[in-house]
Amino acid sequence: MAAPVSVPSIPEQNAPPASLFNACFVLLVINAAFFPTAYFAHWWITDPNGLGIPIDFVNVWSAGRLVLDGHPAWAWDWDIQKQVQVDVLGQTFAGNFAWHYPPPFLFVAAFLAQFPYAVAYIGWVSVSLVPYLVTMRAIVGRPFGWMLAAAFPVVLTNTLVGQNGFLTASLVGGMLILLPTRPILAGICLGLLSYKPQYGLLFPLVLIAASQWTVFFTAGIVAVAMAGASWLAFGTESWQAFFHWLPMFSQAFLTEGRAPWGKMQSIFALVRYFGGSEPLGWAFQWTMVAAVVVALVLLWRSRVRYSLKAAALATGTLLVTPYLFLYDVMVLAIAVGFLVRIGLSDGFRHYELPALGAVAFLLMFYPAFGAPTGFGATLIVAVLIAGRCGVLRGRAVSSASPNKGLAALYELK
Image (tube, rainbow, N blue to C red; front, side):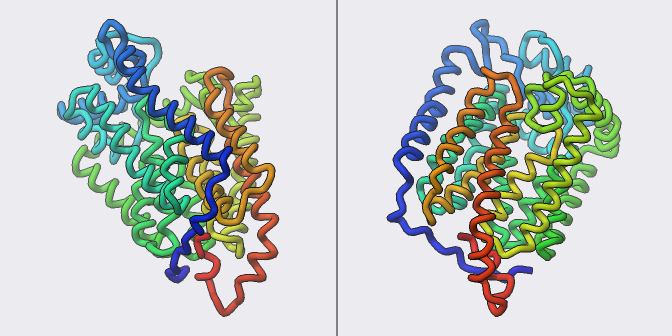
């Protein structure tokens, strides 16, 4: 296990480049101005007739309503969920916003359902935004982190649909920023992340490769405790319903494509978007998984600086799951935050800011393309990390003498 180390500060004289600062300021203003305008213009939450707009958050509130009514296991039943959603919104709609989270997330849903729908909607995105902002500030290591966090293009997408991207990014980023010095807290963050099972592949492998046993076992204890608490609170039937409906959910979204392939941001979805078969999509996806796993295990066992390891793990988390919507690409902000930290400390390479501009463009204009542009953005960030690793590898090895031990490998710089 890596010994605790102090986190060096970034020299304040290294101000963000004007192009980066100005771009983030513009994006921040767009994000901040959009939602009050959208709400009062009835583009967000309610339509001009005062009816609820069908959007992702309705499944969270509806699941919570079923819990409060004493029927938590019904949350996974598509027909029952749909009827509750229609009642909540006051109008019917095509399709279904299915509930597919493990039972522990019902605690969040039940809490939110105690409030009126619009209050819960606004409250959820507002409250979950706070730890995300704090996490990004800690990652970047200076006040510019607040602006970078608020300017990230997916902030608008996640807020618009009332999803959990802020929470997911907070837990991933919190785990990574705490791991070098607060392994128990890092493990708690990772254990809480078990509400997103599709992120469960890489973290255990990387922690084992890096011999981070405190984080590994703490995360396992927290995940088991959450499962046990949800079993006591919501009953065996809830877990049975989760496992019963999970294959149907997979069939609907990964085989039948009930959500347009362009909405998902994985290499699997990209193959299907261009007309590839399901077996071909899985072939590409599993190849990606194998490549990412090997790269991360080698990277985390190397002497490359910790910020790059953290950025790579956040990025790899997005690359290995086939089921990935744009709001989940909030996690990419964590990787970008670590890259910006390095750039502010060491200086940006000539290609990095234009590349980050391309990332922002792909994420902002996803609606215009209707294609998995988030996957392209994630690949760009992965290439930037690989470039930094290639340049820094020799220096990192030579600068960390054997006498410094593992602590030198985890210096957050």
